[in-house]
Length: 296
Image (cartoon, helix red, strand yellow):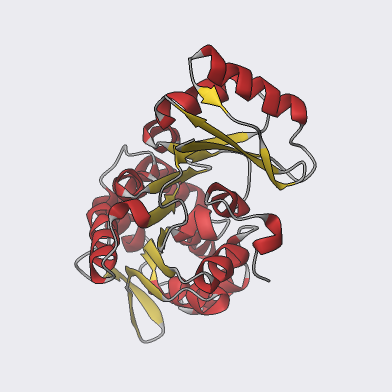
């Protein structure tokens, strides 16, 4: 078998019936499907297959699963374990949009969050939307940054994802359209090798309403993925990119395994792999790690 389809659900929620349903769906499109291999009992399992494209297999699996809260990721078996991870931060490695939460301290959360939503769904130019939102925060005390950080929570599985991949020799980069104030702290907290993001400009303890140029945007994320791969002599097939917004889509589409994580509709529709139900442990299962192999 030269491909694998991984099914992932909440712990205890993946059933033999789900596996049988997907195997039948693969056979219905003339794919040869092998026996399931549990990566974590009742949580994640591999179904090896061949003689069909991974995109078609993934679509068939999702259609067969219908409304079941099970993610299905199909991919080639070759170079399955990735040597480079480039991850978005907001609504991916952390659960919130840090700029929106920061705006709450200026009484502008709803207004700024509406712009963020449109930007992340590709309706607005990212750089222009960022300048607009940051400009609205001019004069806000930098103490709001600290308070926002104190309330920022990691997405379940984030720390385990980084610890496990680094323990297996992968290089992990946090690449965000957000701000270094937050990416530096997240990177230090869970062990990213490096972080790249935008710089909020401050003066006399207040935000100036500006961000350092050039803005770290969609193209910069893609460039970062390609540069880090080239520096390590890795083909893009050996890379993993994950994110949720339109500014992540270019790197998601370029990576060997590009994952739209609980993503905006435009991103979920265009990505080859999606995680709609699971947490970030799903990215380890997708690489073939068994639950017993996860790093503490």
